[in-house]
Amino acid sequence: MTRPHRKSDARVTGTDGQSMADGEIPVRQCAVTRERLPQTEMVRFALSPEGVVTPDVSSRLPGRGVWVKADRETLETAIGKGAFARGFKTQVKVPDGLIDQIEALLLKRFTGLLGMAKKSGEIVLGFDQVRDALQKKRPGLLLEAADGAEDGRSKVYFLAKALYSDVEMAGALSSEELGVAFGRERVIHGLVRKGPIAKAIRLAYRRLAGFRTRPELDWFPDQDR
Image (cartoon, rainbow, N blue to C red; front, side):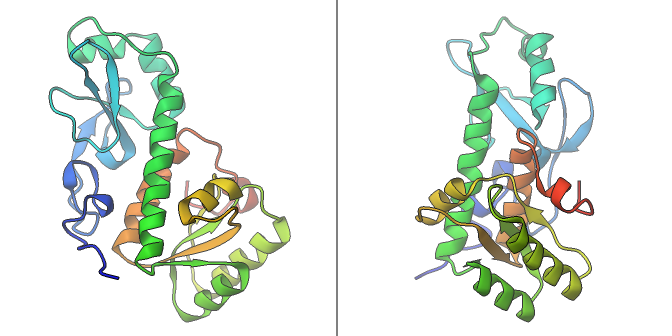
């Protein structure tokens, strides 16, 4: 199977088509906190012709954009304090369930990247297969289902830590959600091989995690926050 070109395939690039491999991620100002952050840590919003605030997680919709830090609390503040009307300089309509819609879109983006990585041979699935892959090369990202057993994920993590100094884990998806990404009923353990797509997946996970609890921070407190 032909692998996607790392520079041109939109699914392995950042917002506005920016490649995750070149390190030149644009910075934007959050309409709420006024922080200047990499846009991979934010969500862009566009305004529809009807004046409806529309999440643009791929940053491709035309027109003026308003950027907000990618976390639930900041979005709640944006909605409650009229940040979108100020940002767009006009009256706007904020749809009900906007924050849940954003979470769903970010989940779809994350699982879509996982599925593409699997087709490209960049994903390893299964407890034994992950442990074997860890013996060969540093991982780009470990995947552990939020509802998986403590014993299994601890064995995977501590093996990785014994072999490599820094290891990042994504644990905010259920086994069913991970299964959807890979066309299976459930997935408990996974590993993304190190490379450009692993970086894109890590960044996509961090945006998604702004709207979810990150259980890996409680499982293993030394995880990168």
